[in-house]
Image (cartoon, rainbow, N blue to C red; front, side):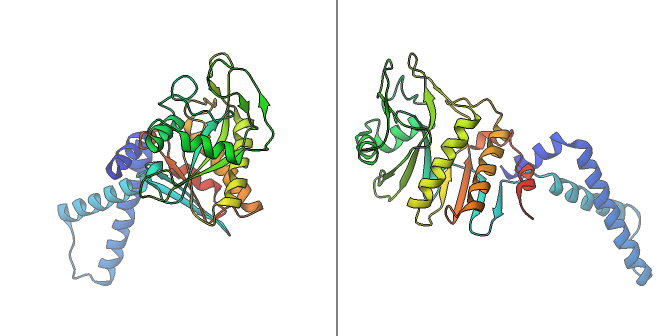
Length: 281
């Protein structure tokens, strides 16, 4: 992925790359001229000098255009980090977006291709009894609406409602925060979400993390890009999540680190250099 970042940076911005190469060439040429002014006996001329200057210029230009693999913001109380990787390989709490019903049946209610479906299959072997028990215990006494839909659970909880699922992997003390991100259509069970709904869902996640993380790193995926279908491109979704995290952590500390984990397939679509504008520095 390191070399892929270089190739994509150069390919997407060829003229800017040439500008950086020329800058590197010019800086190197100036430094050599200064050196030879003070040490005239040291000869560095001809093709050797040109090739060395060209090499330095190319290295400088390519390095400036390389797309980064991660970026971080060091806030007063919290570090916000964005990386490419596998959510299920990250240490700390892992956030999983679910629908308003906290459905668990793989099929029509929960697509096996969604992160929720992958979570159910990976951590519960497709038999989410632990998930259902944790949901029922933690949502006992919470407000809900009874709704009829073609398949799955019928208790609908407010967007942003979040429960913690603990010790779901063998020999590995891992905790997940399942939070209601999307609503479901009653006739098809298809999940759907929009920007205001997503913002509300993230606020519920941040609040639960404040009370339950114990300072551990909170990992979350690029929510809204999958089955929930928020009508934004991947880069704009990432902006929204970062802005929400920055806004909330500047109001009140959430945890020591929030890590947004992007699937490697998004590397060509998202340039993390664009996130630098959100940093206070």
